[in-house]
Amino acid sequence: MKDPDMMGFTTQAIHAGLEQTNYGEVSVPIYQTSTFSFINAQDGAEKFSGKKKGYIYTRMGNPTIEALEKCVATLEHGYAALGTSSGMSAVTTLYMTFLGAGMHLISTDAVYGPSRSVLERDFSRFGVEYSFVDTTKPEKIEQAIQDKTKMLYIETPANPTITLTDIEACAKIAHRHGIVLAVDNTFCSPYLQNPLELGADVVLHSLTKFINGHADIVGGIIVAKEKELFEEIRKVLFYMGGTMDPHQAWLVLRGVRTLPLRVDRAQENALRIAQFLLDHPKVDWVTYPGLDCHPQYELAKKQMKGSGSMISFGVKKGLEGGKTVMNNVQLVTLAVSLGGIESLIQHPASMTHAAMSRKEREKAHITDELIRLSVGCENVDDLIRDLDQALNKI
Ligand SMILES: *Cc1c(COP(=O)(O)O)cnc(C)c1O
Image (cartoon, rainbow, N blue to C red):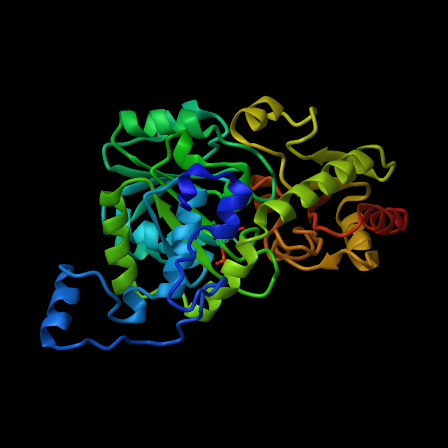
């Protein structure tokens, strides 16, 4: 009766993952238990060997976590998903699965900071090699491929530059060379972009952002396109232990039910705000995939089903101008993170990247005047009024 594959996205988001017990519950119960009892020794043996389906221990599977995994796997058109304790746990679980000593990874140069730092700081200690490449130009990926390259890891749109990478083009290159393509789809959510449909092998999300959407938990998820890859990743996650908690999974389930409604509203707001910023005398430039002045406007239309709600813009007077806006916003909240119902703003040069030298920052395309805005679901006129008064203080 309820085959989620036959339903539209909004229906899937609301229904996928719920398998009612005899009680007829409408919300997935929280199975707050670390372990599950066996009927007898034979039952235990069969569950451990995989002959019989059933739960053993929460690090290896739990009904609440599984409900969320089923829901997100449906939304991403994947074979199955694995919930993780954080987005970074999803990232490191994938690195662990596909890389080892003497193996090489190619990654987007503007990738999420910690996804890069953990390679440079930690995976390097185990002999993993990597190249950070401007993946907006697929020919640069091709040039960086070596015999030992095992994984192409891209993030699109990338943070905080809002530059795009062509997923289909990457899939062709990766598969021609027998390389796994993984996509960090956090900025789009499955509502706006489905990398597996565009040829990727694995997709991951920081659930902390759009999928949960309420700025109240940290979490991550990995979705694999095929059973074989899924099984490999699952083993690594079980042993490394970056598993979710049932209560955390339940909160994300509550959040994901309204994902399309929140994203629709936020991106409607974002387009209005992007246009407002474009016309503002204290703003020099605006990067938003929904504006036809975005250098990759056509690619955005091709691979994204909407423009999202992340905007970067540059203000007059560089570093000082950025600080002035930070110190004067009243409704828009000064905080990192993104994808929640509340609008968040941050100025990398004076905040998240203040410890880097200007030269290093500019190499990472983080210029002094760049402000990043995650547009939420508030009344757009209130947001515009707040941004306008803060900008006018410059
Ligand atoms: C936040 C984020 C992550 C890391 O997720 P956490 O939940 O903070 O561990 C990874 N990738 C992107 C694009 C992110 O925005």
